[in-house]
Image (cartoon, rainbow, N blue to C red; front, side, top):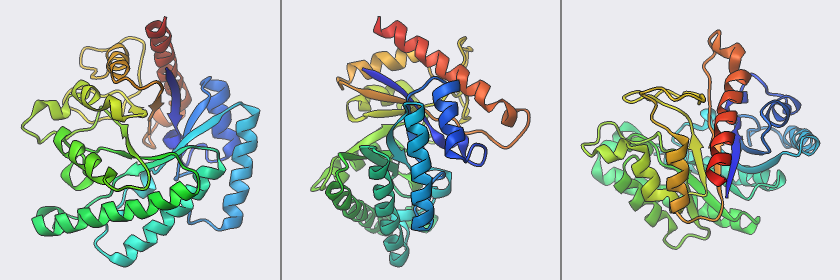
Length: 304
């Protein structure tokens, strides 16, 4: 079963009011599921402010029958966080993620996710330092996972990225990290797979083949981030009904490989972020609707 959802990255600094982005998702895009990003409700905000925002989010979601199915980090958290070389900063981010767990539970979501952690250049290029930092990174996630388990979260997710510093950048590295983080973990760690990611410097072409990623990891991915891109380019594109010759992501192929992964339910999450440029900035909703319609039609056709 496929559930179509949208990540709220599109709303950051454009549709910041809960009533605004929720109505766009429910009324204009006709979607019922959302992955809420920390950009819209940062755990470092005062408790009073967080609670006020949560009330508004829940009221708007009820009005438009929106289910916030997961939470995820966003643009403002594209930092070292749990892999930072400074232990005090690691501790800060452990507490940050615990507060994000609280927000996740409060909005009724069953999972929380993020990129795994980002190494500094120094740590990434020194074998011994990298091993040490990776071990700390995993340990920090286990501490967050223990807290999440106590709060009723079912599983945590992490997103394989595209360079060594951001981790999980090749099929092999993703496989190893997924195994290692799940060893003795308080909660299962699954993937929020983005088939458009992968290390373009890799000698193995499979590491940048979206269908190789799906074939390998669909079974480990309860959710998949979706955006269109061109061959040889890492651009974040929307989907259109007519695929161009150099479009990398074809819905039919994606759905077929996910289906073969054997999961009973998978959430397909549109992940579109737009630059603050015109005319793109003024056409965000129109472009999102095109993507949503493309995937709705593809899912209906595949499921019939």
